[in-house]
Length: 361
Image (cartoon, rainbow, N blue to C red; front, top):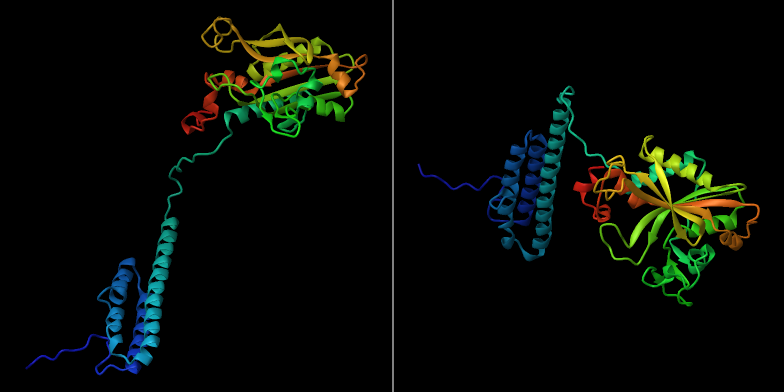
């Protein structure tokens, strides 16, 4: 008995006609939808995908009959075949997505909640932000309020009103970033947070107790202990009968809260144009407890901040009665305090964003 060649399932019988080809397309669409929707595993879906969409699949086999279709019907049938191909592909992808979601849900239901959890890497504040927040909290507890001011300042607030005349070395271009303006030298990036002292005193009458945390700018070479951009925290207190003893007591209380109750401080004479008398405050080395080490350069002391009584000439600029009021001011370098607190010997590490360094804090 001789064998006869049979057409593949769903292939139109010859002679080819547009009507029969359209019927075949509808048949494939219905059958594919039924089988895909009833598939129960990703492997089964992959098999159906190859059957209908593969190079030798049923849809590709129908495409081979298009050249035999009359020209006036060929465009419409080509569009129907493309719609069929896209539709089957979307059906398979949607079904696979649902199966995967169901599998994940089932796996989630079987999680043993008694097992230890996975470690989570939590974000935390930058060491400079941590120290700034700690110092701010200390002075707020001592009765100070927080004030802020602009990073771009006028020469009046940055220099003149702080008793820094035009011929003072601090106003030289090698220290200050000046900004081009209609009047050369009138606008600059502030070199310290002290201009906010003037702005506060212009706006309010004593008693005043404020701290001013912020970023400052100096035209300096960058090395282990210097940077063109760094942070300061300024402090100002103005009232009747304020003395140098009040300044010393305030800063000593700050040192004990910052470095521990066993810490001690000393004051050395210094010079700042906006304070008179002026001083530098040192803290007994927290690493060697005053015995002498490499960090304190064997002196037993660590330089921490500059301070002094507000120069009466500054009061003239803000129209305060200098016979009635006195005040003190201090300026803390946040990078300096942070380096001391955490034992860091290179300021540049704070700005390199190296996670291996930052995760230590």
